[in-house]
Every structure is written in structure tokens, then in C-alpha cells.
Amino acid sequence: MKLNKVIAMALVATAALGFTACGGAKGSAELYSTQSDFVEAGYEGDCVNTTQQILVLSPDGTYTYEDDFQVHQISGVIVANNRTVYKGKYTAGDADADGVKEISLEAPTEGYVSMNGAVTPSSDDAEFLGDFDKSSVKVNVNEGVIVTE
Image 1 (cartoon, rainbow, N blue to C red):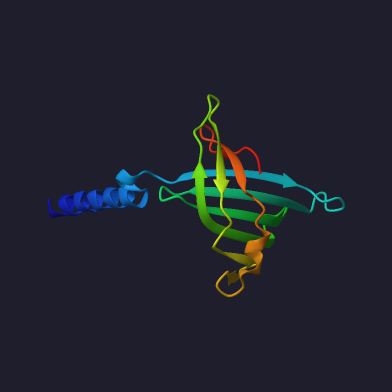
Image 2: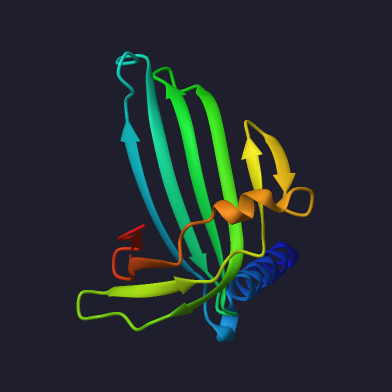
């Protein structure tokens, strides 16, 4: 009987943490992404390149935009992994009848660059923040995808 109480308390604690982590009564973060795979000429049958963009909109008006580039060998080994993460503030319009809404992104104020695991935060070198070229992004709220970049 004591084990059942411990399990029940653990489930309640897990649910409470999940509710809090996802924003609770304040609302949840919105997640949008897009990905494309392509093969460079001369590397057919050897490597596949993947670009991925992820946009997280937090209820407090801040965004995290992640821009990834990976090179995968056909065997599944990741040969190269370059990731740039930008953080800043956003404003969002309302979704239209098709579920598309425009997000205005302010210039990022922080972030980091990771090249094959070597991480450089903007507090050490903020020069890459100036490379951010997205002032607005359209997303589809029904599909969870970035429509334009």
C-alpha cells in the first residue's frame, strides 16, 4: 500500500512539473520548424546535408531561433554539425483563416554558436548576432511549421 502512495505522489509531482514547465496558466511556448535535406554534387551515395530551423515563441514575448546545418554520412554518422542559436523579443499577429501568422523578430540580444561541439556564447563573441537576417517569419499554427524564412 505504501508503494501505491509513493507512485501516486510521483505522478502528481510529475504532472505538476509538466504543467509548470509548459507554462501552466500563463500559456505554453509555441514551437515551429522546417527542415530540408539535399545532396551536394559529387557526394551522391555518400553524404546527405540537412538544414533545419526551429523557432520557439515563449509566452513572455521572447523567441529562440535555431539555425542548424548537419552533414550526415549514409551510415548515419554526423560528419559536421554547425548550430547558431539566437534569442530576442518578438511580436505576433493573429493567424488568418489558413492558420498562417506573421511573427516580427527584433534583433537578437544573445545566443551562441556551436561548431562540431565547440560552443561560443555571445557573451564571449557577439559578432555573429549581426548575421541574423530575419525581421519577420511566417508560421502555420495548425501544422507547426515555418512557412517562410
